Amino acid sequence: MAEELFFIKTNPNIAKINLYNKLCRDEEKIIAFLKSDAKVSLEIIKNKVKDSVETLSKEELSIIFRWFSNAYPADQEEAKTQLFIHGLDLFYEIPEEQHVKSFQEILADYEKYSKQNLDFMVDSQNFNQFLVYGLFFTDFALKEKGNDTVLSHYLKSDYPSLYALAEEQFRAKRLYINNDSDLHRYFGELYDLTKFYKGSIIKLDQ
Image (cartoon, rainbow, N blue to C red):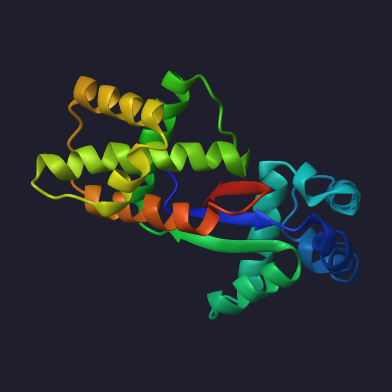
């Protein structure tokens, strides 16, 4: 189980220049993070970035992420800044293993019942639909404890089918999650950060 879950927005045009140039300049440094046939793997990564950073596999993106994180082990904010400069905007993270597990469970249920596959790289519109579902689902959990939220009530009229699906799944599972308030906050903050964004969103677990 992943201990942290990171959410990244992409800027392929910036990556095509800045990340590609950095890969060329620092070949020896990133090679240390590659496995067998490191030079071949690096050339594949460079060619993909030159085409579009969104063609990278999950493993390749994880390597780039670890490479940047390792370069600034004592300053994660600087690592985020450098990723941003190079076309990868790490805009949100879920830092606790138990919260990641609960988030992934809600995602798996949503994929099953909506018949959608939200891979590690997902279109922002599809991701936004899932976030609305997650808001509704965790709101039902909060209501069981006598709490109420404003955002879910506001969104209910705009997404009646998602609301009905979330209610149906919550009632069927009777899932009581101890960290429901934290999860509701994650869904709400992610929704606010992505509702006007048009592009791909990467979900990267570490």
